[in-house]
Amino acid sequence: MSGPDIVDVALVAPRYLAGGGDPAWVTAPLHRSCNWSAQPNPLVPHVVLTSPDSRAVLRLGPDPDGPWWTLQHAPVDKRRAWSVSFGARTPVEIIAGFTDTLTDPATAQAPAPDPYEPLRQAGWFEGHDHDGLTSQDGLAHLEHFTHGFTDCWFARTAVSEDP
Image 1 (cartoon, one colour):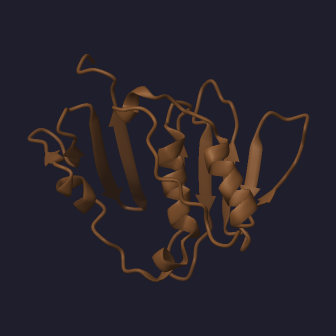
Image 2 (image 1 turned 90 degrees about the vertical axis):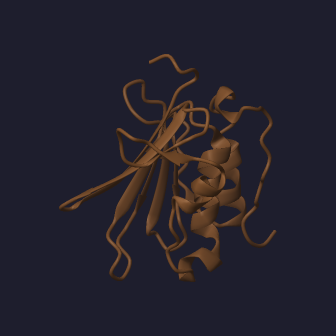
């Protein structure tokens, strides 16, 4: 196989009710199709994958007090190092979409688009009492914070409108 495996399937609707899913949706394409190296250790219940250029490391490990998925990327040219983390119940299709973007050569050369634009096109709206965008049903919210050296994205979701 050449190039990344792209899987564009949502098996449950609405998607936020699905739960985490099978981690192999993320790890298998990175390892098999995109040549990310695995650090096998049968005595440790986690996965560590490193990109072919060694600039990105994906860690998957059960952590009852923190995120299960962490992706760290080294600085490249004038871009700073960055990281992203996902909780245990984050649908693997969302994480796979994120990692698919990293392995697509076209995205490396593409100009940075407005990350909010796809959400606006999907009907997300700007809130009156907060920054960022909120989904039409009010159950998901995305914000971007910048302050000094801090440049963070936060996504919050809920199963119902109850706090």
